[in-house]
Length: 176
Image (cartoon, rainbow, N blue to C red; front, side, top):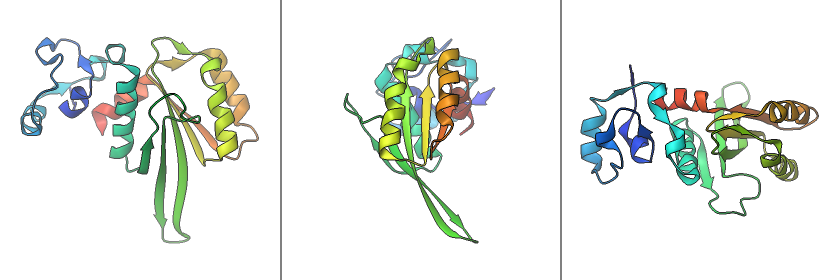
């Protein structure tokens, strides 16, 4: 069993086999702190299909905060200019000094494979805006054609394209 923080659950992730906690969004932070110390969960307990696309974006934002990304901007709404979240990652290197990278994050909440049509305009925006990294979070997985298309798109791009699928996100939730 792996510890799963109730804070993430309160963001909207409903867990299999724990109906007493379904819709539990009115607890105080003190109650949450007390409960999360005693709750054990596994990756398979997390059901992304039970949350909204907005809550999935919020979950991705929370993961990025925990991982040390800075200056995060959540671009809520339709006109997000090719990314749902934008942020910086700063590394202090003794040899060359501080390295600051600009990251774009696109969050796709799907139950099946994400099609090429849903990501092609995001890559076009990344081409225009010039981040150092473009990350595609998906609650499910990429379709085979999307994976192949992204591999071809990576060639010749000045930024790195990263794919973070649902299984990896679940692992991040229970292990960070």
